[in-house]
Image 1 (tube, rainbow, N blue to C red):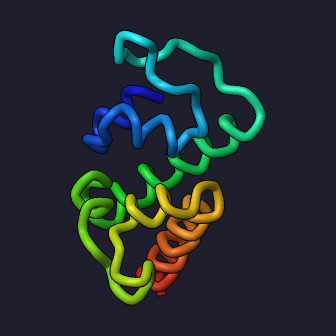
Image 2 (image 1 turned 60 degrees about the vertical axis):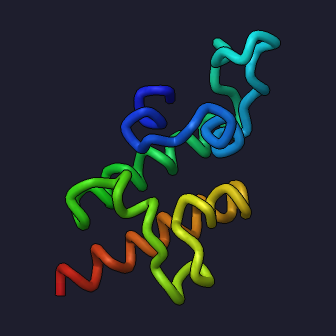
Length: 105
């Protein structure tokens, strides 16, 4: 998980919110934990987002940081995922799926 978040340049606290993980340790370090339940599902979706965004836009990190109106109400895809949790992650993946489909026509 951390490798993906580092590649996307997502700071620790937002990364943990994306994955529905535990908070940072009392010393402010990244916690060590196993993904379970919804965390596994979220991480699977995030990996798909990384794969699709990389294929379509060349790099996921740059695309996630730029606003793509009106798809996400003027927010960046990353902001949309952070604001809307699992549903926001699914929205971003659905958007990328549509982009890939349109490009294939």
